[in-house]
Image (spheres, rainbow, N blue to C red):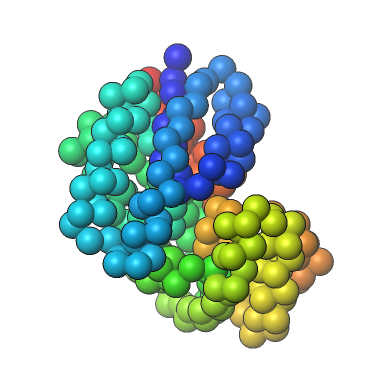
Length: 218
């Protein structure tokens, strides 16, 4: 039976990605590791060699635990994790790559809404990489929402989504597409359904991509 492994930096993501796996691949299994310290240290120091080594150790744990493919759901760590496939021995995906590809296809001016600044660099780099691969030109509009992260840490998830949605709505008139940079921001998308532009989140497309990449070969 195929198993999708997930590396998270928050407990709240386990239920989100488990529900999606159950919906999209009901005959498969999921395996989760949560390490909040990875994001805490990346926010403070960046993805230093020490942080990278700890990410690698967690990825190895998932592979050794039976994961056939791994999804790193943390936007701040995704760039490093994505490049570790050869060393880990199973495919490692970053959750936000399918979202980035969809954003580049949707328009030139892309708003990136982030609640931690450590996400902005990796997400911007990812969007530029996706644009280069697609032969497109983009302009990135950074929308910082750091005050929302305290709500996330306090478990006030409805208020967290509402604050993100307000920030995204303010940016909407000047852009072609909105990217919710972190998986935790995905619930804000439903609060923005009335906007005339796409609002993209990563969880569903990440699981869909993992299934597509693992399925044909296992």
